Image 1 (tube, one colour):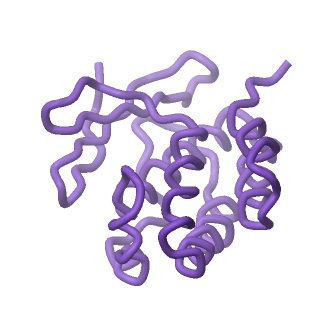
Image 2: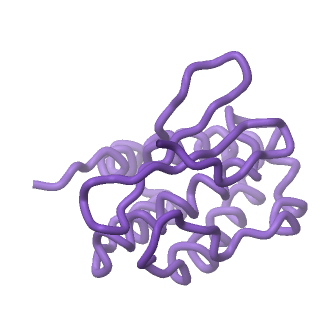
Length: 156
């Protein structure tokens, strides 16, 4: 059973459903008008950030700084289902809105997905550092192979 958590200004619906990794685990999915349901992963966020950085490097780097400083470092694990957004406010979008011209995702959608993925990660792996390392490597300008490898790492 999916629970609608957020609808973007473009009409994309973001859902959560119970997961199996922990009692508070959840999965994120989304429905865009006219497309099938999709499940976002770190790699989708990173690819979109590369496209945004190609179009406006300065603003894209500021967006990643915002993600690191205001999401990665501040999001907390949850103890109940469904989760709620802890940080996101619609006002966060305005300064980065020119980036909507680049990539597949709007900044609003990207921030919502990123926050939910981070909440899920912190809930299941409270001491994990994957997202911090991933976004830091991207921001630092590490080579694309290193960043994409970090975005697709599955443990082991």
